[in-house]
Image 1 (spheres, rainbow, N blue to C red):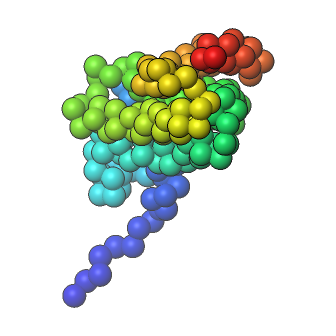
Image 2: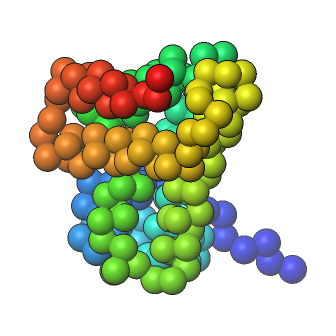
Image 3: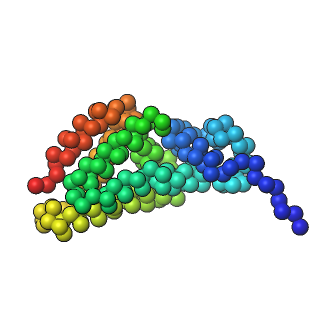
Length: 196
């Protein structure tokens, strides 16, 4: 019985490279030719391991969340004081979207801006990951309210959406060329909206 051919490439490294291509070019702007050129893997190899472009994109979204978004979510859990946690979370996101080692902006936000081009499955995965981030921020605020750090009548869902919105705004600003100093100033202004 034949064992089949051994893979001639590292799927993990290919996925990392594909992630960067999608991050730089977006879903629509990324062709299979772009992916094969960047990864050095021919189309049959990509299809055999990852499926079509959409399946590879979904895997790239998941990898991106694991590598970059979870670091911010851990920050929300690391601080006892919610104000400090949210400020540090925004700072983390600001540093991430302006990191010169990676494409500008955020893969999740970049793809949200072209949501009408995504399939139902890809859009569903994108929304699921975004919901995880919002839920983590909401839990941080709920803990803060229980500790008396926020007014008892504060609408926590609206507050969570507000600060998630700040991360989206920073990603768009970074994609447009904003630097870290600009985003730091933006964060300080956003924190002035913290309920007293």
